[in-house]
Length: 308
Image (cartoon, rainbow, N blue to C red):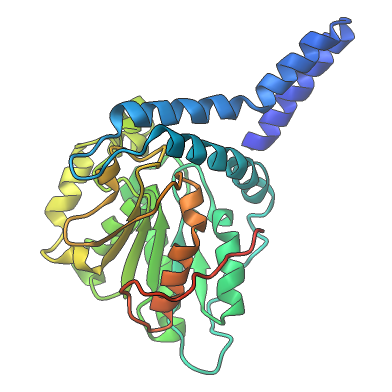
């Protein structure tokens, strides 16, 4: 819908001023609308530079922020302008393993204003490896986070029934909070093998203060919801988590917000928020964990996910 609205805006602006004999204004306005997201992304990185400092994590220098901005500038239209609006059903879930041996499944949980299509390159790779998976849609998109928890639980149940093994949950951004809320229920503590979060605002994000939907208010730093979640979680819970974070994350900052004390926290260099989903080191580690390998980092060459 966002991409269609953007296209409609470009056509409407251009058509209006072309009809009135002002082609330069038509072209300039259409270009501004079409690339306006670049300005929004740039503002996010400026805010990151101003308010993203953490006590224990060095800030990214300006050249790295510029590099990350350029990366996100390329990746954003692919994800939000093509993959999510038009390819949501391109890769169906694969609940049963395609290999003869029993395989652990993977549950894929997207973040705010996304859908399951953000995981399309992952699903292609998992299918090729014969690893069962289920990718959820967290809907309605503005819902309080607790209302989205049963969606994750249903996907976990499907894979448990099919494989007999607790799955690995991989969650991006807001999806990691939904996964945490599901895992905080005592009955679910043993129902996931590992939980991998990618750029998740575990302690909230500075940008949450400018959001007014129920779920964005819950993602504000120090929100009542986040404090209540911590109070519900059992001791040593975070040992099951692998948390990927980065000081070039233009959505979740301060940087330390994406880490958990006691978890396996792993920094991704010069990687912006959306592109973290496609970082080859993340996919390599998830494939290793799902295949029963060790979760410690090693020298195994990273898997390169296909562009899709």
